[in-house]
Image 1 (cartoon, rainbow, N blue to C red):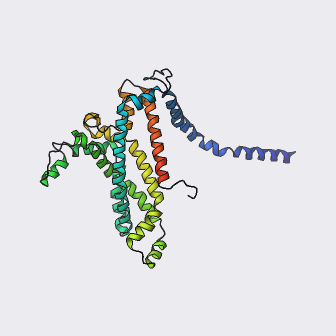
Image 2 (cartoon, helix red, strand yellow):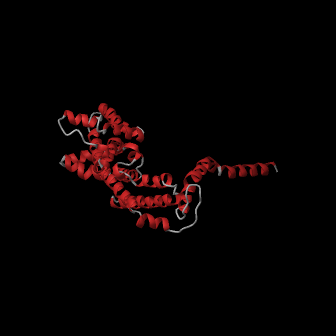
Image 3 (cartoon, one colour):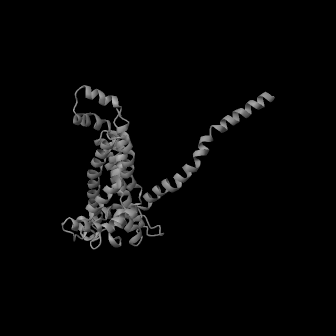
Length: 308
């Protein structure tokens, strides 16, 4: 009997132990459900209502979506501004980040660490702080930019922050300073993971440096290019703090020339009668835009195929 009792106890303990991993992940899963999945589902539900502030509103079907796409040209304008910024950020940051990574990978190790840290530090600074600093730099009266232009005997009275044609350019410039070093670190890590023997074989075959770069290095760095391009595009489409804080009085530039998609949602949710249902519908449209663009990038770069 004693042996049977011991066997049963061991069986029960083994059965209980099989649930141990679930006890450890339970706190994380609980928080994930409460703060991620529930708001996700709740936002989808109220996007079909005319909810305002704490008023749950009534079901109105796709009216919010129809109004956003066909009755409110401001949403389309925000899409255009966001796409201009995203394209500008991608075509400036990624090539320069790759060149910097390539150069750092080929210099002495004693200099590499210092330079890598120097380029990476800007992305550690809070975005609001960066926006306020550059607002001072671009100030017409006492900004450093106009002062330097004056020293170079160039036109130095440009009203950077109040010229609507320069709004997207300023955001691209600030973003370039902040995030290029961040992308460079990913490229550098990928470069350092490439087997040096591949380059030795290429040199023995008489391949030129340009051919090695174009036909060996770039193809082997496709995962890094994919990651950087997709995450950069997502970050650009979600831009919020820079257009809000870079321009005076939180106006998103003169004539709202820098109001991207997320500030558009913010304005309707918190600055215009708390139109939560309308803002939720706009948020879901932005989600769809980001998803479509991400899938297109992955397909264009050849990632996610059956042979990957």
